Image 1 (tube, rainbow, N blue to C red):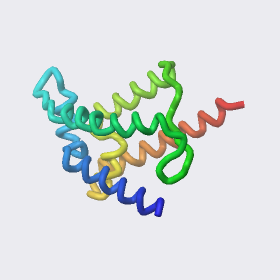
Image 2 (cartoon, rainbow, N blue to C red):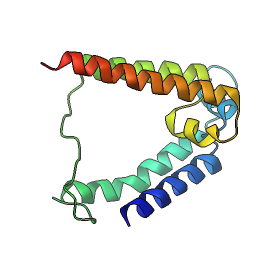
Image 3 (tube, rainbow, N blue to C red):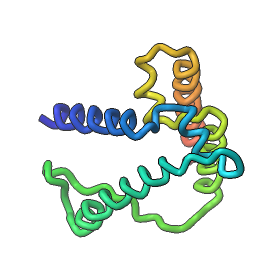
Length: 139
């Protein structure tokens, strides 16, 4: 049952990305081009997503376990540190260069475009490198 829920959630998320235009690198790059031909429509998508998520996240913070009976795992760390800022900058630069972020990259991977394949392979390599660096960091 949990796998079916995860599948349906992923399917809805992917469909939402496609409908919102988040899987279209040209549209994403137009959104990021604030000094040129800026397309603010993705800002409306983000505001809508934040508004929809606000209620469930507020509810979840008050719960000890999920609706499926598992412990809630909501991050408690709230301070900015070098790793968070560096990771955010790296993510933003990659998003700005490619016009793709991880969720839409997986969504458009099925199109077979070589750019999406290269992006996902680079993303997986970055995740692997992070795992190696984290293992060295911990005593």
